Image (tube, rainbow, N blue to C red):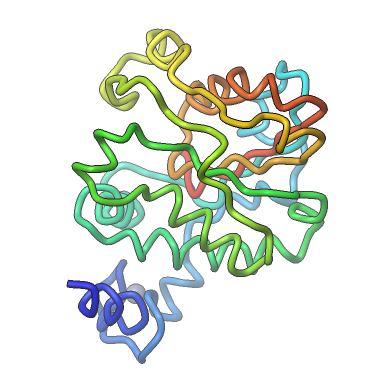
Length: 226
Ligand SMILES: [Zn+2]
């Protein structure tokens, strides 16, 4: 199992978007890489992802990398890394995003990257946390450490995607808890999610992180709806 995972991580055979044959070590063909539906939000302060967090007191900046359109190749890729045991796709897309974001100062003052945690029950069922794979992709390119121990999800809430938007804040209220907050004082923390729709989950995380005194937050999402 491990060797298959390793092989597929580093040597996938076909482009994850169009299915064309690939040379070793890539997940996307050149054509699909060029045509990724980029938001370009990392170049744009006050973008539509930042609007989700504008009222959060210690919020710095936010950007989503790609637009997520229904029935698009990106939807298939997200489906594959979320539900079909291909988290390496999330990792690779994050490394592509990080290389492009490095052209700006987006990562410059970030001290630590924290992925949105899964509840332990869901983690056991799925076997991995796709947001952690995204965080590791960003971390491997930027050299910024990834932390998965200081924030945990203590309530196994219903999936946000299954709920109407007006119920999502309530669904995620109080679902996170923090450990050893003193180790996170005065840090600039990048919160990482795979798909951001209303920002409710991340806002709930920020709320739980109040004991991280003097810390401030930025947000990276791999994709968001248009
Ligand atoms: Zn392709």
